[in-house]
Every structure is written in C-alpha cells, then in structure tokens.
Image (cartoon, rainbow, N blue to C red; front, side):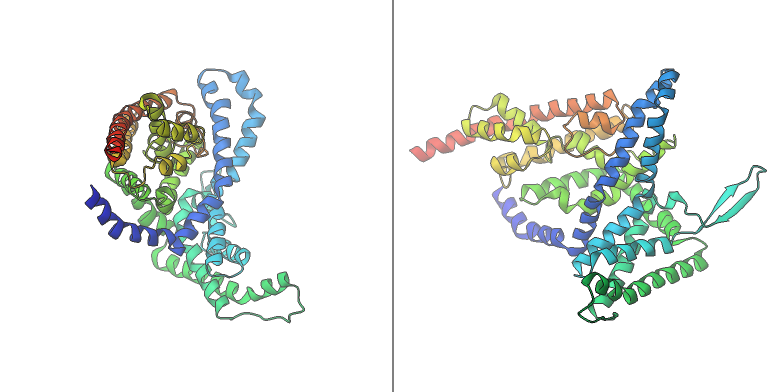
Amino acid sequence: MNGFTNWMEKHFVPIAAKIGSQKFLVAIRDAFIAIMPITMAGAFSTLLNVFFRDPPTEWGWTGFVEAMQPIITVNGNVWWGTLAILSMCFVFALGYQLSKVYRTPPLAGGLIAFASFIAVTPQSIEVTSEAGEVISAWGNLNWTLLDVRGLFTALFIGFFSTIIYAKLMNRNITIKLPDTVPPAVSKAFAAIIPGIVAIYLSGILAFIVSSLSGLSIGELILKYVQMPFLGLSQGLVAVLIIVLAVQLFWFFGLHGTNLLGPILDGVYLSATAANNSAYVMKESFEYLWTRGSFDAYVWLGGAGCTLALIIAILIVSKREDFRAVAKLSLPMGAFNINEPVVFGMPIVLNPIYFIPWIIVPIILTLIAYGATAIGLIPPVFNAVPWIMPPVLYAFFATGGNLIAAGVALLNLVIAISIWSVFVIIANKVELKEASGSEE
C-alpha cells in the first residue's frame, strides 16, 4: 500500500495539480459557479410547480390547481427567464471569467461573448399557421438553442470571441483616450475595436458554416458533438470512472469535484437541465444519470459518503479522538461539507481508509444507477442546492419521489455498515501502534 501511495504521489498528484490550475478549466468551472443563482431559481420554480400542479392534477384536485394558477404562471415565467436561456447566461459568465484570465476588462469580455453567441444563433424560426402552412418568421430566437442544448455552442463561441478580444486588447490594438477621460469611458472605448473584430468574426464564421452545411453552428455542435458526448456520459462505465477519479483526487488532498467541475457541470449539469426541460414540456426524460445523481445517491455528506463515516464512528468507535472529530464534523457533514472529516481523521493518504473510500461510492453508484435504469426511481431532473441534506436531496431532486428518498436512505445505511468495519479495524491498528510505542 505504501508503494502504491508513493507512486501516486510522485506521478499522479503533480499531473492532477496542473489540471486543477489550468486557467481555461478554471474559467469554465468559475463560469458554471457564477450561473448557480440562475440554475437554482429555475430549479426552484420547477419544484414548486411539481407540488402545486402535477400531483394535484393527477389526484383530481382541480380546484386546488385553479387556485394556484397565478403561482404556477409566475413559476413558468421564472423558468423562462432562467433555465430556458441558460446558455445565454453561461456565455456571458464564461466571457467574463476568461477576460479575467487575460487581465482585460471582464465586463466588456462578457458582453462581447454574449453578442457573439447571439450572432451565431439563427434569426428565424418556422411556425405553422392556422391553415397548416409552415411560415418562416424572421426576428425570432429559438429557445431550444438557448437552453441547455446551447451550452457547448456557448462554450465554443465564448472561447473563440473572448480570446480574440483579449489578444487584441493585450496587443494594444485599441482606441486610446487621454488620461483625463474617466476610466469607465476609457475602458469602453478601448474595447471597441477588439469587440467589433470578435463579433464580426463570429458572424462570418456562422455564415460560412451555414453556407457549407445548411445548419447553424449551434445545430451542428448539438448534433455532432454535444449529443454524442452526452450519450457517452450515460454509460455505467463512464459514471464509475468519474466517481473513481473524484475519490482518487480527494484521497491525495485535491478537491476532486472541483477538479472535474468542467465535466461534472459541462456534461452532467447539461443532462440535468435537459431532463428539467423534458419534465416541463411533459416529455420523456432523455438522460438516466445527471449531475444531481451523484449528490443524491453517492456523495452523501460529501465525496466518499463521509456522512456515513461520521455516523459509523459515533456508533462503533470508542476512541475519543475519532469521536471528537466526528462530533465536530457532523453538523457540517449533514450539509455535505466534508473537509473537516477528510482532513481531520485524516482520510487523506490514510491506507486504512483507502479501500472503503474507493469501494463505498462505487457500490452506491451501482445501486442507484440500477434502480434508475429499471425504472424503480425517476432520473434526477431538478437542480437542488448542494448543501441540501442527504435523503432530502434525492426527494427534491426527483420532484418529491419517496422511493428515490428511500434508495438514498438505503445507500446511507449500506455505507454506514461498510465504513463501520474499517472504523473498527482503524481502532485496533491505532491501539496496537500506541501500545507498541509505549514499549
């Protein structure tokens, strides 16, 4: 075990650290973090309508649904202003964060990325008249290219336009005003030439792609990049690889969920939003496993299901130092903050806890994935704040499904059972080491 740990420290950790500090990945991660208020507001509106509209309608409570109609309508408006335009919000956040990386005015970078994204989005939609005639209506944006389905396009265009803007700014290809001009005005004028170039090049690229393929950039990326990529992410092997990678990063003291944020958010958060749109439009769920699935069933209390470890220590451990750490960590672990127990026990580089640290999340993933695949529980479709306590998280993330909450509770019990075995082993090892040192 020591040989494995030393090898991983020497070869794995430096690479992981470089990946975690890579400026473009950091910008993507921070952009997704920045749009959290948008995703949470949209998720909250969906959740409210679950309880005010959907089950009551199924139960025949028509009077209640009619009474709640104003609230239902407001929730629909909120969803339209958040999740339905998620890509528009993301591309601005990405342009902002990338501009900070290049040390250029970030507000201008965000606005230029946003304008470039709109420039490559088709300006007309096809509508069917009352007579059944299909009419092309100009001056409209198709929301299906602006919600989660436009995220990969937003990612590409955000990088394309912002890097052009930033490079031109850093080479001083700008309009320079006298020092007496207020800084806000000076910055705005400085961004004019880089902004014009970036937006025009985006528009030219959209024209070329459309002329050659007959599809917009967004439609092309959605068809040949985003959909296949999301499809690959749904396989059990892919999900297990993500879980294993997160656990390995954490074992060596690196924040695994942050390091893999671009994948977890860029891919699996997209799946969450797509399922949410399907729910709102009363369509079948498209994706089996989403971003919230990890938190609902696997990372209960944080990566490694550390809430189960805390409970196991409080149940079976007689060591006062272990119990002290567990008691201090419990209030935070209940809200999925696991740093106190990860670094307090510690779990990092602890060979005794390596096995449960790896196998517990894998077992929990297999259970939850299987339950979802056979239709016992619905896929997660609602984004829930990550600090939502375990079990409740699964309940709300699946629109109030009690069986989903039951699966999360079952996973927690199984995790406690496995962790308990290794807590007992750790107690004995520590006692032997203590008695040996006294001799």
